[in-house]
Image 1 (tube, helix red, strand yellow):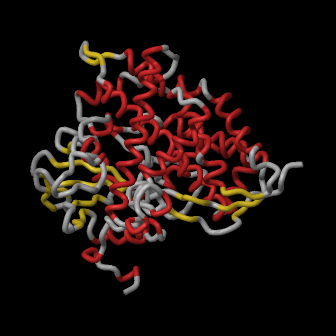
Image 2: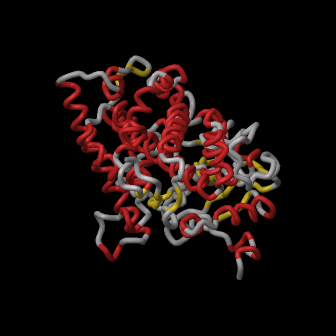
Image 3: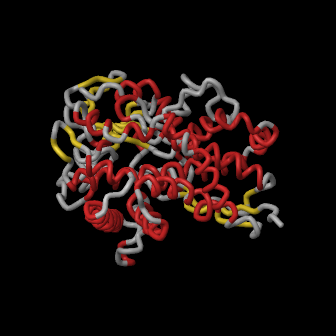
Length: 424
């Protein structure tokens, strides 16, 4: 059966091959048209879930946390019998991303001021400096893996500096985030037995091991900061109070875990996916070369087009109806952002990559209570990267096919071979 004749009942959005093989947008097109509220049935060990693929429905769920809760995790995966040792269960209600108001608001307020437009704008000269240092590393080679040698390094460097992670530990953070957010991909299942690689059990074990490494790293940092205070976000968290109470070490560790993951992985994939889109649409790349001043607008289209976070989930706190479908209390509702960002009812010609698209009301950063804390940093990093990349290597082109991440949560590119005229 060809993809064009797929029936919604044959679609399982828990299948990472859909995303790894680049078939997701055709699947989402079918669902938006025929089953915009779609049920993925349970498996032997994992509960089923509802999927929302229309922009309007995703906005509705995002803006009503009193009905749709984040506290039971934010991915589509929910085991029938939760293991309290699994990171997916342990994070319930522990990170700001898995909190509901009012606690979510109070916790987020602790770090908000470091992520305001004004605070982020002050970073631009330094981010431009970091970007050019990264590009210096490939300048004389004439070819590179754009993901591992360029795209991954900028957001990693920025979030590590914010968190006070020294340069010699940046490679560790790169590995840990790959193991957690890429834990379902055999390439990153480096800590599990070979026979488990590529299996759900291998993914579970790798994610738990990667999380444990990150927690151990930041637990050591907390001890160091207590002995010798520093000027970084970890110190801010150590000194913060909520309702007159200091944060527990566990609170701080979950904060660090989230900030490193979210501040690194998603922007990396927007930059990598953005370059792929520009090289596959050379007329759009040429528009930027001819007028670099459009990069702020182009950045929004890159984010819409790539939608690096594939989904977030909520759990219904009461019976609710969406498009005539009853969702029962306790059932999981998954919001698919790449589908919303190509919704024909919202975006004219949504399958056209247009770096001058205006307006561009994408929701790749989410919407409502859980709007991405680091969106301003992401926009700045994407813009500066392409300004500097095209200034120095205007003839950059693909040197081979991309390798996509095997994941239903992160829309990632693992490798992107490129070539360009080397600098003298």
